[in-house]
Length: 440
Image 1 (tube, rainbow, N blue to C red):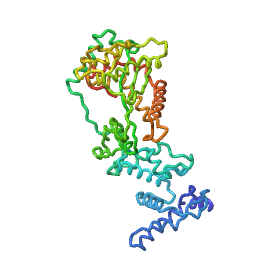
Image 2 (image 1 turned 120 degrees about the vertical axis):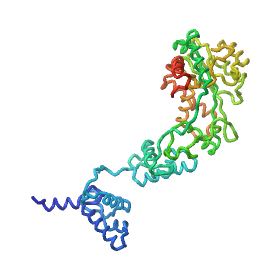
Image 3 (image 1 turned 90 degrees about the horizontal axis):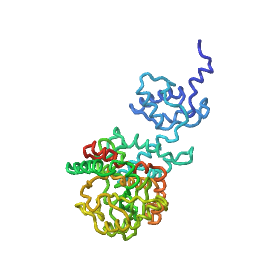
Image 4 (image 1 turned 90 degrees about the vertical axis):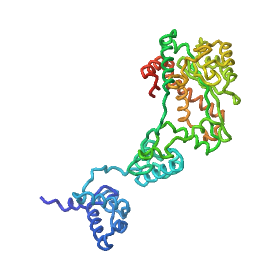
């Protein structure tokens, strides 16, 4: 039975709002062939587009608007690649509302991200929004597109050398190892603590009686240039947007570590101490003139009872065993304790786990030390907690307030209690790995 005339007309002239009807599609192909004949085989897409009309908001009538050059070019390409094409054929793609993140916006975002990398910056959502406010603006929500949406563009349309090798969020090349003698030292220490020391294998004892202590420092940039250096260096061990064929490219390698450690006229050093005990951690800022030596660590130990009482409560019985690394100000390179530090420990009523000679403690054991995990928690939280001003204008007082908020969040959100009982398990894992570093 033949279709009624009205139904047949609708089939030819109706389409989703803002699209080409089957009639206009057929017209586009006729114009393409005419353009080829007139122009010696060349297709003038803009001329074809000017002769076509899109459907209006109802999809049942034509508007006065012609399709853009890109849409017509894409349509003609799709037809050329499909020998079974016919007017009105549906590709199976969604016919819902047009996406707010258009192909043009995606190209702008991708271009911005690749430009950032080409000029020495690590591509970021924040910088892309700053550079491309129009392309990253969502007219529906009246806000920039979400971080997740913008990062998807990075992974789909950005590349280092070859467009067919888009970025992946992956680690840069790393080459680190432990010498055989250090691995053997780690094994001897683990066996000694677990099998020879009283309570060495008791996680409860470590949780109740040990204070983990570590002096640290942070660098605050004083200029935008120093901030950019520090940001690149801070990306060293993180996954980054890198094409497979460009992992050795200089822009994809690590930044200078010195930017995160050395004070200068463009960078200010803030010294602080991390304290971990009984499922709580604290960060205490040290004086501006504090130095990492025996006298400096004596100052830290003298203030430690007050720090612990603020952490654990004024009426708490304090843990009295200190465990640190064999760092400067506490031990000599051979493992002997620094006298000023040892005297301060005794005066404050504490004791050192290894006593006056820590030669049995492995020199390279950051993956085993619990306070190193606490430091990593804190530094990560600080990176994610933005200053209230631009980073190169943040003062010591503002940094201290931000640090206080981060520590409060860590004590509330992280399993610091479990961490304080974890040391024996780490030692056992070290033994299972024959002294190798623990997997992160």
